[in-house]
Length: 222
Image (cartoon, rainbow, N blue to C red; front, side):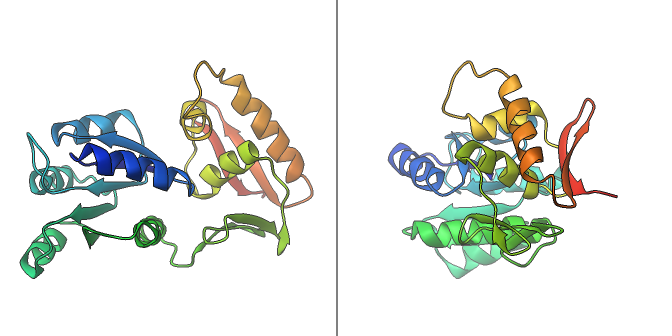
């Protein structure tokens, strides 16, 4: 899952990028409120972690701008301003959740996962496409309740696809999710991984479809 973090404390932001990155989250960090809209135009994110005390454009203004533009990205407010009035104001303004500093990263991860599931109409912690399921708690794929053997990169690609039901993901988006820490990776690497995943799923009703000009889509065979 790809997250945009808007936080002006470098030490906290660096720690969060690393901590969330160890648990299936890819995090991009901006430290200025004006950068949020620009980042959202350039990249498709699954959720936004938003601090209220941002320079240039504070969190309240960022949230207001997003909702006025009908941007429905799930927003989790992460702030030291832990008052009842602040919580109520943020939720009324369109925030989806509110977590006060200091916090436990495990709770933040759980809240993010729940937000993203609800945004996609899924309340259960298991993402699914027919008999193929991914449990975000155990980080395991199963087909008909049997574990599906995947390499780490195959796992990352299939996880991105199953977490975006009905939405095609382009090669660029998959590259950014799978090879975020590597430079000069050729797009053909994604084609190879997609081919391998198709082989893993060939005896199931689940398939990865290529949509010309759009990308790849995980779906059930007709």
